[in-house]
Image (cartoon, rainbow, N blue to C red; front, side):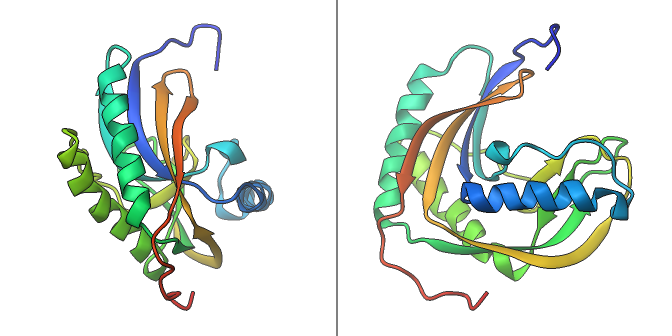
Length: 194
């Protein structure tokens, strides 16, 4: 971020993240493969790669009360949530304007992620929060400054997701503050065979 960067808002989110070794492999791979797809620019750093499962809201001032409620929701959700299999098998450009972020996504491999989204909504409502409807397909943003239209199958990227993260995204500063992390404590589900 440049010296003139300023905080635009606090964005309260729930994430799933790949294990750091998988995230580092993703970044290293796409840093090498970028030009094959006609893409330029930097890949998102490994520690920022994530799948958003709930966007609570954007706030002009630090949302202390909402954070306390979200912490309760995260803890409640993790008590019954089971680890899920994630598989990303597609690279694509999102959006329709000039700024089309490049992302990884999937079809079969995001079923568990979508189940987390659905399961978290009623728990958020029970603590007095709503999750904004996520209009985009389940995805992991790799780069924000793409102007190309791409949509290709890729060799699958797989991992087992066992943790939920509550994050305060400092919009305008490019920073994510982890406010809470919970391991899923529910019974192991059958693998999707991914």
